[in-house]
Image 1 (cartoon, rainbow, N blue to C red):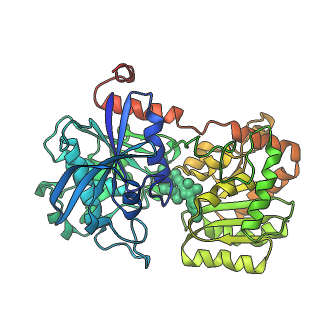
Image 2: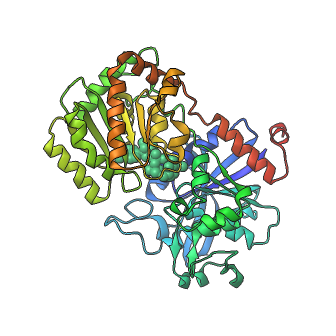
Image 3: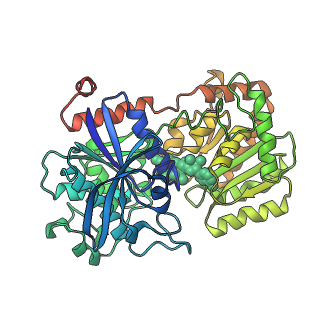
Length: 487
Ligand code: ADP
Ligand code: GLC
């Protein structure tokens, strides 16, 4: 067995602001049977502590970056968790990164340095009877892990750094460096130094044994200035150890045949049952109970997600007879752009703000088209859920969207392999064309149904990618995957 410690700031079903939580929550289970045991280190936010009854304390710290903390181990929903309970750092309202007013917590550098430092201590055998061989760090919040390991005393401990989004890098002023518990020479290009300050994601990408990102296309894109966001040079230098491993989805949590969030469950052969869900979605978003195409968005409302491109096309969609349901929250300006469209088009455009997991499932089960018009998308999970739910994805041709949706172009339609609609570049006019193309496809009922069914059958599971991660861990510690499965 290979022991891997996953370090993450979010994990479904305990704490989620986006796809990272879904991935961190699903990967441990997906790896079972592949010779890997994965435990997950996560901060003790209120939502996490509330679920951790019966956990046992396995370590304590009198001075964790100036505060007290302890590690509590426990099992929640099939996950083997090690929770860093440090109330002075994590017992706060709001989401993991920002307070109720929407500002980043000013001590985020310390909150996530502490998480990463504790991970490296676990790697050195802090807890008796537990010694991970590989630490798998997710995003900038765990970006210092590879640095602590590189500058620490263990020559055998290996690290994997997974980048879920280059847009969030965790950069701080040089003045924090002295408090990071790293040796002086770590403040260098080979270490944590980044444009004169400290870069957490940069540190991870620089110091990890292997870097992965969440789709093959994004792994290529981030080697260019437009997508690398400053880290492209570094990624090019180490391109032989940068891999794109596509995310999968939790096939049990997202299963239209059993999903309790649906008004009516269905399979590829009972797709007429989706109608009850469509009616429920229309009801939830204040839309007329109409029969035309129902487009939907389930997303953070941000520039990354191309929500401005969507907003610019709403009048066109309504004029062409479509309805639109938007579930999401984010930038006030984008939220307002969608809200004003709901006022221009009552009964045709609906917006539900806030985070609603249950409603997100219902929308996948009832809408006809799921729109993901992102400017960049490392992987994207929404389109994977859409495929599984027979909700046809309309996506921009970037990152993981490029790798998971087969565009209904003439050749793909003739070969009967299309699963959705792609457009490029991410512009208002290209999206407008894609909307018209989608409407034309929808009008051909028979071929639309076929496209829905093909989506439902496409493999969006973790099978291939979990095996790939297992292989990466094994190669890092000098094993073949067969050896580890035999243990
Ligand atoms: P990202 O992580 O960049 O936000 P992903 O597509 O990888 O994008 O993951 C988004 C996840 O968050 C999906 O599980 C999606 O269903 C969910 N999600 C996004 N917005 C909402 C919302 N308002 N309510 C419920 N779930 C949401
Ligand atoms: C990030 C990316 C998204 C990806 C998710 C999980 O939030 O924006 O594309 O699916 O991480 O890897």
